[in-house]
Length: 390
Image (cartoon, rainbow, N blue to C red):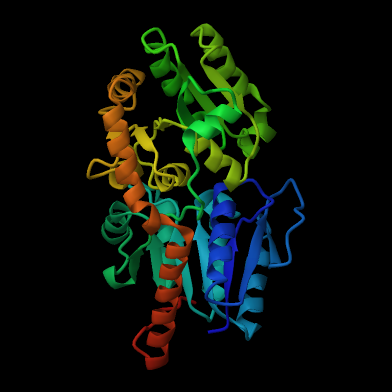
């Protein structure tokens, strides 16, 4: 095997899947000297990509998808293609243009499913089922997603691989020293991070905090991350301003700090390592993946979360506290429980630390490579058969 080609968004585009692909690419370099990118450009910006981006696909230009496939077919060094699938990053209704690329490939590809909807529209079902039918392997990040792929999208069980969301390989840092650098030595710190938007559940987190600050006056809630670029383009900072107004309405000015920047892994890790609790207040209970929650678990944090699907699976076995409902009241009960019980915090940190090695990008990339090599070997023996539609 010579090299991989990853089809995805890619930095400097600000996007969770772009970061995912960058981390995967960097980690796969341990196994192959060349890992190339075909990057998705959006309608509004031309990105200054690094040299590993060898092909650009204009999101809404249908012909670009087929052209990329033809290039990959002719590129002797590319043996395996990895398509990162999320409906919103590809052109056409529900991102249907990616099917042009998949249909035109005559080399095997892995389909990485970042969203597996339990109740898809007819078109969403058609797109994912079609892509999965063409793929040599379909990767998902939870057992629940694997069941949905099998039961709803009719993906053959032998084509499904459960591979966890990776987290950066970082050295653990001392919490108290990090707090001291920010003059937060006496604070009990709760953190939520990621691109900011209505789906983040910040309103729930803030209202949960409001009921506790009188009992725990040392509480400090860090909200870390830039506004999602699509939201920023469409309506500016209106959403963030509404969250800041809620802070004022709840009289939490002394208990909430915003860092409005889009941060790299090292700075995000510093925020996590100085945190006592990571709070994941997502309101959408069907959310199948959360890179931010995986990152928090990878740094060994005590986690409190609403009971969305990814959290339920990642935190099973007592690795975190799950609220009964995605409400401020339910989160407040758990925060109170954890803040009043330091030994429970230590136990949760120990349990998340136990899984951190299996979530590291070096470990996850090893699984990608192992799956790819097995598929390529099977293709040599003629045991893996593709059904290519005209």
